Image (cartoon, rainbow, N blue to C red; front, side, top):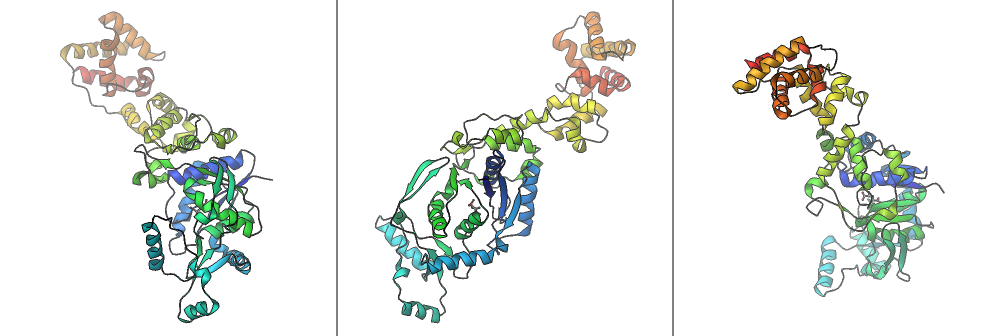
Amino acid sequence: MTVTTRFAPSPTGNLHVGNIRTALHNWLLAKQTGGRFLLRIDDTDRARSEERFVKAIRADLRWLGIVPDGEERQSARFDRYEQGFESLRARGRVYPCYETPQELDLKRKILLGRGLPPIYDRAALELSEAQRAEKEAAGETPHWRFLLDRDRPIEWDDGIRGAQHFEPAQISDPVIRRGDGSWLYMLPSAIDDIAMGVTDVLRGEDHVSNTAAQIQMFGALGADAPRFAHEALLVGTEGKLSKRLGSLGMDALRDAGIEPQAVVALLARLGTSDPVDPLLDLDSLAASFDLSRFGRAPARFDDADLHRINAAIVHRLSFEDVAGRLPKGMTPDGWEAVRPNLSHVDEAGEWWRIVTGPVEPPALDETDRAYLAQAAETLRTIAWEDEPWRALTGALKNASGRKGKHLFLPLRQALTGMDHGPDMAAMLVLIGKDAALERLRAASA
Ligand code: GLU
């Protein structure tokens, strides 16, 4: 059977690193075996779902190179949910409930006060036809719960957590539909997973107890449950999912100069014991993706890792990869020269401004100024074509007796206005002979 996975975001906000990780892992899991990865927009909540978020979700996935093999929308499938609901109702697996949120809250508090788990008491199941009719006549509209079968434990072999065992009596019958007829996520999701042939559901461990209930829904709908795997949640360096991390979207990463490859390289491995390899592309990551490498401990997301991986990726980007993002006039040689000094592509502009000038002449003492006058004179006479930096510093070394830092630093300062930076052999060529002479003379004055 073709492995089919899905990523099912609700378009009520932008994706953040946590959901992107889930999307990526589902993509990797499918692609590893040549399977299908679906994007399912969970937009049953019409009030909170917005089209701009649907667009942003698609754009973020595209930016990362995650291409879905199909897209589905829950809002186009309400008739399916109605059918599924009716078939469960016919089999007595859903039942109407009339408690108000306040009543439910009170029930919960009483149970908790007695030290008992706050499990719904199924009082609505006890209502007689007449009592229901009375409530309906009084204008009360029911919400609906799925009736869990309490006769057997719920068990599954979780792809990450291993053998799972739940006693259904320890779980409340989940509300699947609100009084206004709208859907909660659980039933539509199970109906869709069946209809779309989803074989593997990989999601966060916050869904573990939903899975227990959904496994019974699959059975009640006459289908086999897919394989399930639940990942440990993402935490920030502070140890919990900070507000900042929870809202850290792809826009913010893009604006911070992070390359999509860096996001992919880090998130693909986050939560596993495998090292991050900035050089692996999506296909190689898919080939080596392995659920058994995931641990139960929270996965730590560290910005600093992302920037470090980003630098490693930037150091390998070709001029063609970045041409559209470089300052006007910057040449392939210019890119090659500055690339090793960059953590982010947009820093190339700062170095290119140093190449094109003007640069601020450094404040130097008299001996250094004299040395730079000598350097200007030497530069004028050397053959420019053939490694001018080597020729210049070689000649100056002999003539001035300087070496090391004393030989090189004043030259770098005069030519670039900086104490550090890209390789001077490349920089000098990019600056050009006339500008270099001018800068050396300016600094010697
Ligand atoms: N829309 C659900 C969520 O975002 C989907 C969960 C799932 O993957 O089943 O939580």
